[in-house]
Length: 434
Image (cartoon, rainbow, N blue to C red; front, top):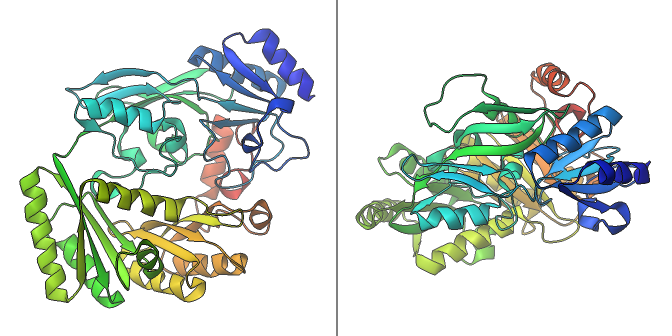
């Protein structure tokens, strides 16, 4: 079967790279539960070739795992019985950058780091700060709805997408939205595909809104007693200050990064220099009034601070490490981070975005299954969720990585049936085994 798949693709698809099973690197197979390895990795060079590959897969009922660079192949559920992996890594052209309209149109395989470099030259940027920013592709970022701390000011992934093209399960090319920011016509497939983990179609092209770069930037870290940090967070959110990021840090993060004692509140300002200076002074006055320690970071020091924080919380540090995405009512965030410290000691780190209540967790050490269950229960008690993104396969086989308890599962299954009636795209990777 595996040789048949590779041979047929090699004989019918000319504009793609095909790597056979025996030459497939182990990282392309991680996170897939199957009795047989995927037959090959197919990386088309054009949307038309991508369409052709998917049409062939559909005609043979081959199960497909879509991805970009593969940096998040292990996230979410465990796909089952995958016949081939389709990567958009060579669909990496920036098609159009409308500087004056603050939009960019690009293929799904463009890496965020490359896009930011291009945008920065025009004094602009895309406000997304995902895990693995050097290797993450825009298609993968959208499929996993991986945004980061900038959502405080700019919203999440779905808030920056204004147009999308994708390959349907039958190989046909479809599109929605456009290149105009105020496009309101049509069915909002942009939001539907955001966070769909490749289960509805393969994203091939995106149009996204971008923003001007701030002239200056600075980050304040406030540290101290839990209740006082909670008060500082509420004061900040109720003020006229306009931070681009405002994150609550567990005490273990503060200690690990050597930025103080107790819980932390990390606040970033990016604007013209006078605004950054004025807002920083206002926040420092709040910290002094509440008796909190305040440290200011700028230039290279600030960049290193954010990079180190991302790596600490969002990237596994060992084979046994677990990374999670969570959410709960924002006013419950501080107590949740206290609870995290109580059950994980120094081998559990957490960050929660102050306004949204969304965040990331990193766990390591023993009794991981029990600790994940306790943390998930605490999130659900506060109208939230906890999704296991990366974890050892054995742990994911013992629990539901999604832990979904809402009432929309039937709707999600109907949408899956409508978009992929043969269940060929990322089978088993999404909520409820979709």
